[in-house]
Image: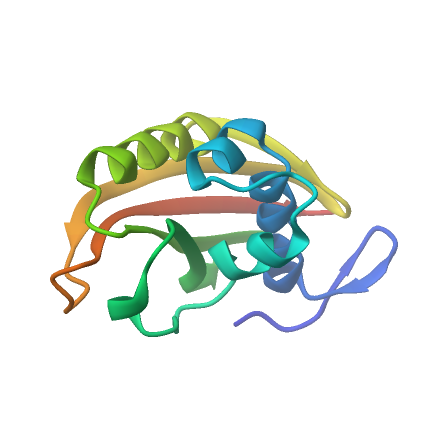
Length: 156
């Protein structure tokens, strides 16, 4: 999405770094883990239930809640090339449990909306949830609730 940028600590792919930062945030949050039914030491479940990509396994086989997140678009500010905006989609998928999906989505809203996060080489990382909606999974046994989050990054 974005080319390499010179940032503190050397060259960096900012959006790729953001993927890793978000995964770290989600995979270490005790409430997210509890809602997903993951023990903190269960690395196998972490990688299967918190997914850094759009394409998922067969949704007809969803037995545990899943959290998929991925960048959907982004751009540089035309007046300030060090200001980047990126939109991430967070899909909360449950095996038909609407209430649980809403609980997870509410906690994601709490974690991400109106927050200033920090990341290596990034001076400011402001986040806002700009949209929330139910999304179609194409499978009657899987329910999906989606949050679209805007990240604004100031690269040092």
